[in-house]
Length: 131
Image (cartoon, helix red, strand yellow):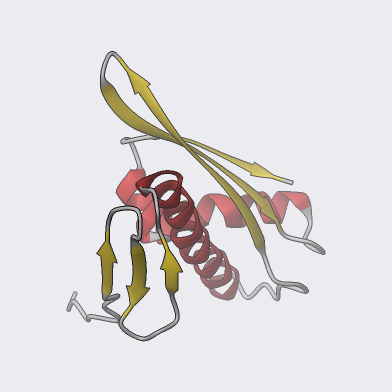
């Protein structure tokens, strides 16, 4: 198998009261006066975007036409236990117009495709729910 680079995201983040984040392509330019909850929100957005792409890819592999765009509501919890910080996540997925069994198969397949799901597998508690 030959590795092929598909995309490199480039960002610049500055901290402090006047903190901000921007991407080199200009698609993201936001103020970040506090690192949290911004980090959890940005992680949820990035993971959800990737996960939607993975669902669409899984559907195309199975020759399933999605009648409407998938939607994901992500909840990323920042927790602390005895001074150790950790994350927990919930992905609530909507696939309107798709049989529930097929939709469940697609959201499970997406975890094996999405690089964010792969990166977090076994590292944080993740609950995925078809809504």
